[in-house]
Image 1 (spheres, rainbow, N blue to C red):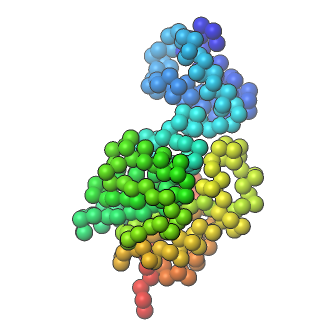
Image 2 (cartoon, helix red, strand yellow):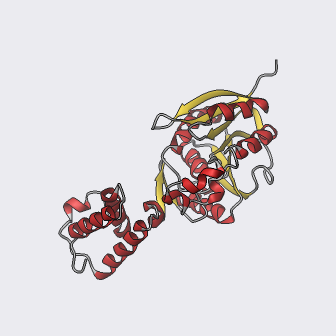
Image 3 (cartoon, rainbow, N blue to C red):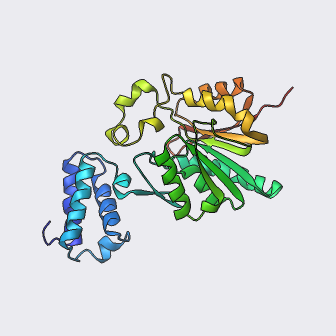
Length: 290
């Protein structure tokens, strides 16, 4: 790409990624070049004739080589948009997916109501990773506060960084904990997007997931439900009266997770589908004692 213009660099990148067998090569090329060069979405139209210098071309080449190796676009760029947030990514964190925004959107009205009724809403995000879920809720619900837990110190450092980047650090605390082990106090909302992939399936996942998302955030045990059992067993001790437990689930886990929660004294009050029409979010409250 010596002496290439922006338009020529984009055409070369599209061809290179398509030839590497990437189905969305054209989109990936645009996202990578825009991210690497910090361009606006319209720059390819308005500034296509601009010549790129050697350093810019080299940066594009490095990014393309990583994408050819199936590293996801947003991991290459080191950040991803989620809800209204700009999230930094790290090797220790799951890359937040758009479907997880459904979990946030489901909880916003409940958290908003709690703040209106009691003056606050304390949120516990188990396995917080980037902090995406908790930080998005804090961003959208003024008056809410949150604790994010994770086993990975690297993930917690990323979550703290994201809280600072997005202006909610004063309302967020990151705690190293194996689920509830280091958690104290009670919460209005307990939320988690736990590992829920069946162990035997991990090796069949797309390279973008299998090679780059941390296994700790994917592997849900022999039936994919280990984390739900652990959370269900401990949630009652950390949930305020009239509090809520919310999960992201695998597309075929609604009935199984509901049964696990029922066995631990919870009643399902909502089930929400994702953008693809699959079951994705479950919402529970403590079952009434009859």
